[in-house]
Length: 491
Image (cartoon, rainbow, N blue to C red):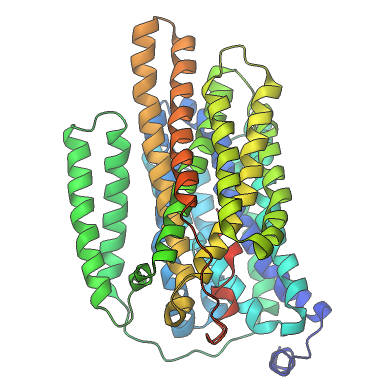
């Protein structure tokens, strides 16, 4: 191990020597990213088995993403303080433990709690894994290494729905979580044996107030948005929004006064960064909210089996993976604005197509719309994420990825909570109006896709004011793991 470490420092490591430590990181990342997608297809079965509502069970997604967002900013501090290898192995163990607990859940409340435990472990796996690989890999082989690290990011979202569909239909929903046990053990064994020890560093005092305030602010706001989908004047909605809003304001005040804040909010001083991040948030809300409710529509309204549902949404992930490298190449030539406008316009068109669905809409129509969503996502997301990184102020560039990655998870949780709440209320209204449960549900899904489409239109319109950030050749190169835009897309 020591010789490997020495040669890494000297830059003489071959790809073959890196395979073993890379495998530990790839297996860990694959497991976590996969788990972000498998639950979507299983949601209808979870609603049925627990005899609960969609608006309750969606917290298995919202709680998980909020937990991810809570720990992502801690990754850098924890690795410097306790060592990258130790924290990586602990997070894999915590994620695996959370997975086993999820498989044993007997109530929605238990499942939500165990998903939070999963998220607390899973949030640090990708950033810490990437950091270790970049420390190991010599610069001249970075392209090859990045290609290997891109495998879990592209494969997991594609395989997740199909694997989940198969397990839910032919085995049991418990296995979408239990399957992580052997994978997690494998990742830990390989990690213990092959990951090198990285020296600990002296670290600043931890931002305790930030750690406390951020989860309160984001979880209460997500709760308020969820309840707001049903009624914006209800007591629950107002409590969630007021408590969450107050906590958010205090959090912003505290972070701006901290020398080493949990999230570096000063980066919003750049207008280019702010425009880019707002567009990224809008596109994530439109995309991920719609992605989550599609399996519900396919299974609850169309009567698809979980596996059929997983196979139906597969083309979207494949199209996203196909267009992502295309978007990356085009970004270097034409910048983010044309790609963002084009990508979000395609996503808008797809969501408008889905807003016109009927009880007997042909499968090819739905698959076409989902493929368009994937293509639009592939074109626009990598471009906007890279734009955000390039437009960050020079002195703050190394702090951007923790902020943007954590914020992405928060926006996804808002999207899932808000659109699910809206869908639930529209189903109630339409069923009462049409006196037909199926037609009422179809109309409600159409309305929800329309709202997502309107959000995507807003993103495309704001994309018009994007401009190319000024080149910062004299900027010190940030740590590679912190400036990798792919890291911002691992959900």
